[in-house]
Image (cartoon, rainbow, N blue to C red; front, side, top):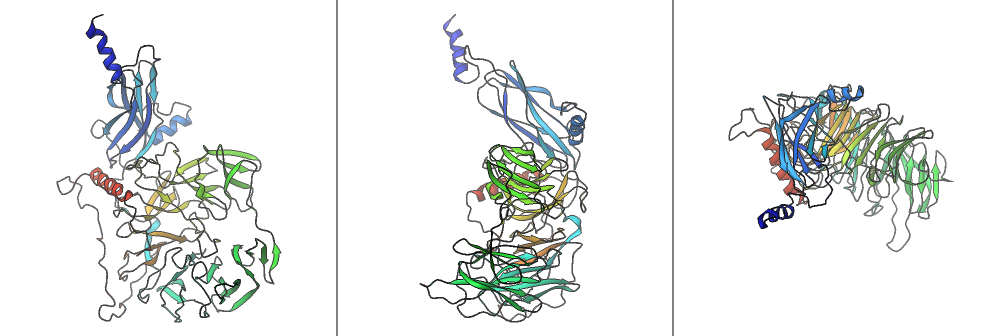
Length: 621
């Protein structure tokens, strides 16, 4: 063999284009698949393919989600009948490193139908075999549809226009606490502020308010209790209200106590009727006494003192009791996410995966030791939610759960998403994933029990009682109306619930998607009322500041006829956001780029924001 004849293979091996002599041939690998630039009629399919040292060819294939499900139901290979794209395979050589490939689905050869769900995957072939990808989801945008709130929701400003120059406090924003809670039956919200406003007048360090909905609008009362000067310190005892009954008719308050810095400071509590203002004292005092848990009507309350002893109150004095036990289905449990009301169904994470236990029968929902994020437990205070019948579980996960893609489009790291498991259908959905199937630009979240001083007894209703609505915050832009690159509040609704007509469900904004975005506060048990905090002026009468809003099903109230009086510069209105921030035409011009250009610009903005995490979250001004 001449010198040039043997130098060429050596050079190809060194360049990774040819496997070394004696190496076992391997079929190509497909470590990643994803989609970008989804519009109503086009999408860019992408993948990484490792030829494993042999000359490799690839193509994509796709079919509708309906056809995919029909194949599964008929016992066929899921991608039977899928259309190849391109029609002829494309060669990518024979290297040993992953190569990025892509193909654009567009008219006329690969036309996509607006508002339709598809499954796609890459397929790679070399001399050692053919490797199909795991497959991903994509959904095209609806043609010409403008984003609207689900179920005919309309924004109503809950907190009053005149807030004494102040604003509504975010969760944990008042001395490390502040009670925020919605009535289970809807139409009422209690919240706090560092400012004093409404009637009757009061000016404690933390004022508590109760807003109720009337035919003419939301009416706000100041329900702050009379305070002894110096009776409350700073963190964690600065906010007197600790917990309300589910109808907001009763409230549990920490009693004031003046103590010298060096002396022990025993604490005690009282119940207050919000309608009459009458108090019921719950003696005795004990050092470090804190609320442990309570029944929805506050008819029974458990307290724990500094020594760890638990006391129960149920109308008489405090009596020794036992702390409520977390449901435990057996050994090896890492964390319990929650249980049904009758505790015959328990969801938990162990070393093997996220599981459901019912009467001795165990079902694996997601395999893997990190299937559920640790924030999901303990069951009493974590972020996971279980419907009362045990049929639905909402939880957070940063794990890779096909066919959903939680790889951040900018960082390449996993983002946290919200998932919903339906036991009756044995189905798992990523409710916070981008409906188009594109990679996320930030994580989603649902709140655990709100920290209110030493109390963590109330968890906002992020999951409706029937399990068919989920409320969450997302840093990602999930619909076209979200243009602010800030966290916003979203709702996911199951197919057939409310106005949702798309399978398996619909995603919609709850907050405005403009300006400052929003933070989820709470919801009524049926999800008709969805309360959130925002600095945006979403109704004409809102002159600015941070307010509590309700995105109410069938809502909308008449605007007040006259604004509040202003003296000099004491009352300046903030400019409203544009009514319609979307492009006015779909014709592509230098001033109106195609839809995927705007999405890529949002991705680049988010990448810059990700590396400068100093952006303000809602309620911090």
